[in-house]
Length: 345
Image 1 (tube, rainbow, N blue to C red):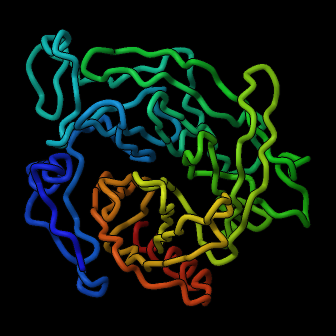
Image 2: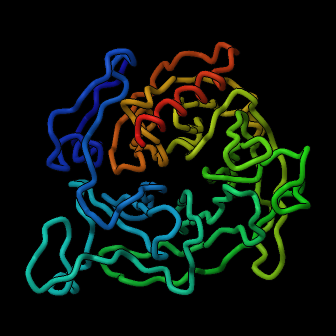
């Protein structure tokens, strides 16, 4: 039975459901009302949402960042959907509403960092992990993760990484891989489990425009800032298509991973980290409704918040999702994605 929310207890969820000054939630019937649109992020500087994580240290805080090409910065957003600006800077910067004599809030600047292709973030009780792991062309040799001691967004304008951890894939020796090797060295999904960072890959065939199914799961076993840290292969799933975000549930029992055309839910693998080989559920997404989903975080153990690159946010009820039937939807997903992109031109 679906648990009824106590909104006093889950104030953060209540705020998201009632705030953002959004219109009435829109439900999509074919997904049994599981997915509801909350609305659009109204702060213009958040222009291509790529990473999303709910803080564990600070109440009522979501961290967000843009995709490649933006400044090295994070945006903190509160439960009312408004960017958080430190009070001592409120006379200099404005949020969603333009104010005379003020500049738009530039976000929390991560000093000494560069946003080459930030694709996802993860948090634990102490740190924010910014994954600069986007690698569409499979040619990068400077992949890695910025580790930032999580700052108080209501008191800081700048932060400096604790360190940058360079990363490489053990199977890659050419940049990009030479045929017949496949382009499997792009990651847009990172999560924390048992104190370690994990990455899920997004696949192509042998060229940047040759999309392909499948994902590989890797673990980061060392965090040396002076030497290359080689990822450890852990697991794989052939049926996934273009995964773009992942996060472990608050109770650490479920791993959610999302792509453009489907959402996956993996149950605790029992004394193992082979998440992709355990109890697996899958929810098809209507790309025409949800768009290009690029980010994901948990609001509680039954509810996800997902966001697309057009700055739209949706909640997803993940209770009793249908079991994965073992039938691949990769070809169908490829077709849906191509048709969607043609319509956007």
